[in-house]
Length: 414
Image 1 (cartoon, rainbow, N blue to C red):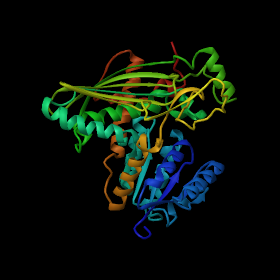
Image 2: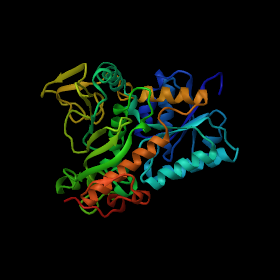
Image 3: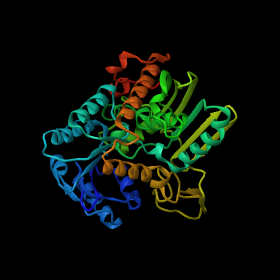
Image 4: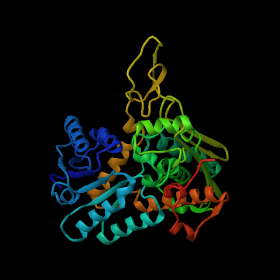
C-alpha cells in the first residue's frame, strides 16, 4: 500500500464494474490503480471514468497476470462474466501462491459461480493461496435495508421474538449484455442472475445484526421457473435481432421468472422462510427491489421504486431512450421515479467501503465467498426442485455435480 491507501485493480470493465467505479468517490483509503479487460475499448473507457471521477489513474492491462503482479495493485475486484470467472480466479491465486504477486485480498462479484463444483474450486484456490476473499453481494449492504433491519430487530424482535418470513424480490425487463441471456454461458437464466441477491438478502434479514448467517441451517428448497415473456415468438425474435447470431430463444430459452421458498431452522430450532421472486419480465419504471420482514407482532418493507424524487414528462416530449433516471429504465414519459445516487442506494458504496477496510486491516470481510458457496448451493437446489417438480431436502449430495438443464441448453419453457 502507498501512504496507507489500498490500490485496487478491476478484473472486468463492463456494466457492474462501472457501478462500482461510480460509487468510488465515497470510498476513503483506496484508489483504483489498475484495470484488466478482455475488451480493451471498455477497459480504457472505465479507466477514463476513474480519472474523470478522480478515484485513481489506473494502468490498463491486456494481461491478467500483469495486473496482479503490478506493485500498485494490493487487492482485486473480479467483475467478469460467469463463464470465465473460475479460470481467472485460479490464475490470480496461482500468481499469489507462486510469490510473483502480493495481494491482500480478492473480492468477487455475484453470483460466485455457476455450479457448486465451480464454487468449491474457487474456495480451494483461495485457501491454497492463503488469500482473504469477499463476496460482492451489494444488497446486503443497502443502507435502507440495513437501517430497517436494525430498527425491526431492536424494537420488534427484541420484544416479540425473532422474525419468521423474509420476502425478497428483484425484477426488471432484462439484462444489458448477450451473455446474460445465454443459459450455457451464464449458467442459467434469471434464477442464477438475480435470485442470488434475493436469497442472500433473505438470509441477512432473518439473522440478528452482527450474527453470522451460518446460524441459519438450510432445510429445504421448493422452486418454480418459467419463460413468461421472452420465450414468446415476438420477443424471441426481438432478442435474435438485438444479438444477431448469438441468441435463439425459440430453440434455447432461459427462464425469465423464478420463485423459490427456502426453509431454514434458526438457532432456537424454529422454522423460518425466505420467499424469493425474480423476473426479467417486469415492465415498470425500471429496476424494482422489494424486501419485507415479518415477525410475530411486526413487519418492515423496503421498495427501491418508492423514491424521494419523481419527475413528470408529458406526452408532448419525445426524449431519447436512456437510463439517466433509473437502472433498466423503461420509459421517458409520465411520472418517473428518480434515484439520487444509485450506487449508494443499491449498496455498492457500503459494500466497497467494507471490503476496502477489511483488506487494509488484513481481515476477512463479513461477507465472504463461503457465503457465496451457500447461495450457489441454494440456487442449484432451486433449479433441481423446479426440474423435479418436488421439494429438495437439504443437504443433498446430488447438488455437488448438478448442472441445471438451462445451462446444458436442454431446458424448454412450457
